[in-house]
Length: 385
Ligand code: DAH
Image 1 (tube, rainbow, N blue to C red):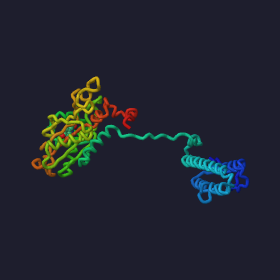
Image 2 (tube, rainbow, N blue to C red; image 1 turned 120 degrees about the vertical axis):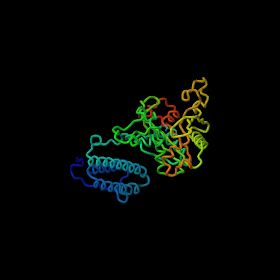
Image 3 (tube, rainbow, N blue to C red; image 1 turned 120 degrees about the horizontal axis):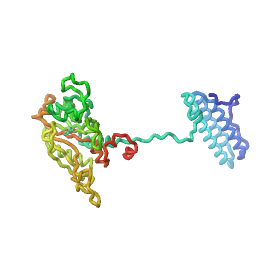
Image 4 (cartoon, rainbow, N blue to C red; image 1 turned 90 degrees about the horizontal axis):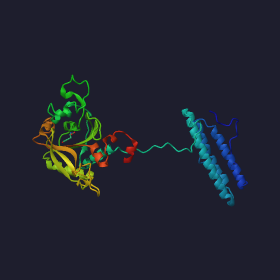
């Protein structure tokens, strides 16, 4: 596309001015800008663009510099103001022309017409909205950070796991209901393998306990954030994929008191120093004793009622307590699987815990439908930015 002047033109040279009247300055400026536009129209490639830029904007002897010297510096005192104004105008025009020449060069180089061959540089640019961290990942990261401050390091493991790590080494008996196809999503076509090698989508982050103990000798303190899967149809409080955060501390003489103190501290860090914790007996195959930990409801302050009209508090179902996680002392049977790596159940003890990051995010942000976290609706997510 040749957009240049069809007849060869003489290169513009900056004239010396003798007449500094407003009229004369205007004519001189118009000549100059026209010349600049004509030359710009002839630019076709990177080299010509550079030559053009140097010729007009070059610091030492570019046309603009010459104009500054010949028109402005040389102007008699009473014409300085007007000359200055004109020179500034010329500068702005030349910069504008250069920008357009750059766009045109881009069009030629890429073969892509930017708005039908002309660029309207006055149009607003394309907005790139700044993203924000997803509320579930944010919750997970904040919880992990609480434990990192206590000296825990972060561990992870595979989402596609074997039956051995997901169940067997965690002391699940062979016919435990959690292994049932009702709960676990198995990878198809594994029947030929011995049961413990069969692949499945991990149903919890607990297998990373064993995997880490196989690699690292005691003492250890780890947190494990990650995704898990269960064969649950999606509804307001279930999802086939969700997020957990697991923890494990093993050392000599770890007691249930350490478990309670650590988790109580972590909850106060995360929810605020006013929350209390309560531990109630429970059962998990891999911990003994096991407990469920509740925190006092941070929405109603533990009263079960909200506001001045004493409306029932829904998140805690009016009990004043919200269940947050499962925990317990690592079952000696679990240590047996990693005994050779320094985990002799007679010498070491430990505690473990596991919680759902999605559930905690629901509670923390007062969201009433878990599915909102997975739908990617910007109108919902924008509220967390
Ligand atoms: N893995 C359990 C679950 O998904 C949660 C859990 C409970 C993890 C107790 C633990 C624990 O480490 O000690 O339901």
